[in-house]
Each structure stands twice: as C-alpha cells, then as structure tokens.
Picture 1: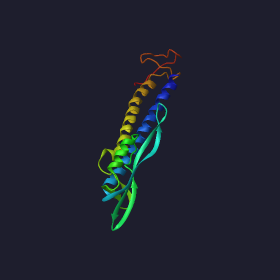
Picture 2: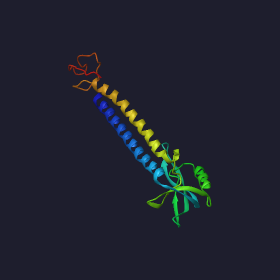
Picture 3: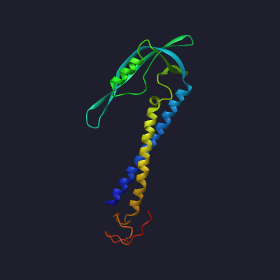
Picture 4: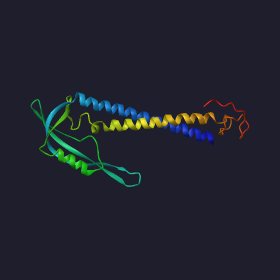
Length: 195
C-alpha cells in the first residue's frame, strides 16, 4: 500500500513539473512573439469603419453551466504607399463581460481614428493593441506565473516523496521508523538511506 502511495506521489510530482515546464515554454514563445510584433510591426493611422461585439465561444464553469465569452471585432481602413487597405482585428483577448467589450466597441466606434500596427510582410495583418501594456502580454504573463507555480509545487513535493521512499522497507514497501533495524511488517533487515 505504501509503495503504491509513494509511486502515486511521484507520478503526480512529475506531472506537475511537466505542466509547469510546458506553461513556461508557452509563456516564453508567446512573450517573444508579442515582443517581436511591438519591435518590428510598423505604426499607421487608421479610421474605424465598423465595430461590433461578438460572442467568441464559451467555457464550462466548475459548478455547472457555461460562461459566454465576448470579443470586439474592429474593421480599420488605412493607406500604405497610396493604396487603401481594409482589415479586421480584435483586442487579442476575450471577456465574460459583454459590457466591457461594448465599452471597447464605443472607444473604437466608426469614424474614430487610431494608431494601429501592421506587419510589413503582410500589410493586412494588423494589431489594434500592440504595445508594452499588460493586455498585450497578459497570456504570456499568466502562463508564466502558472508555470512557476506548478513547477514550484512539483519541486517542493519531490523532496518529501524521496524522504518517504527512503523510509520504506525495501522488501514489502511498508513505512518504517528511521530508528528501526528490522521491519515490523515482514521482519526484513533495514539499512535505511539518509533522506
């Protein structure tokens, strides 16, 4: 029973460390991508031609039911090298608050002018929120924070699980006291490793 419990702890620890590393990897990749957009995409003045709030999916809540998610789609018109372009973008995040997205749609109402950024290699690829702000880097920051949390929990649990393994009888897996010379369960001689 103790051996199974010990293995279960070890498997959970490995899983938490793996999840932490995956989250940190995603955070690094996404953060680098966003940084590259801020550094290499060019600014241009644009006029909003259309702005609307749309339901962008939903997610299951832990207590049952689903929560609707909303985003704001904004269509911009801008001119590059004498050529007029029209492209649509979103703020890059969703919200469960329709009111927040409606406020954003009002800020980016038809006829308003804003500085946006466009990809020089693909001028129809635009961003309305690119910049050194929390919203633009939020997915990377959240994933990085969760990655550190999972990794920290996993590593902190790894040390106690090794101690438990060192306090198990090598013959039957029963937990034993460090001062015992023989296992009370099977009578096997014990040579416990230091934890």
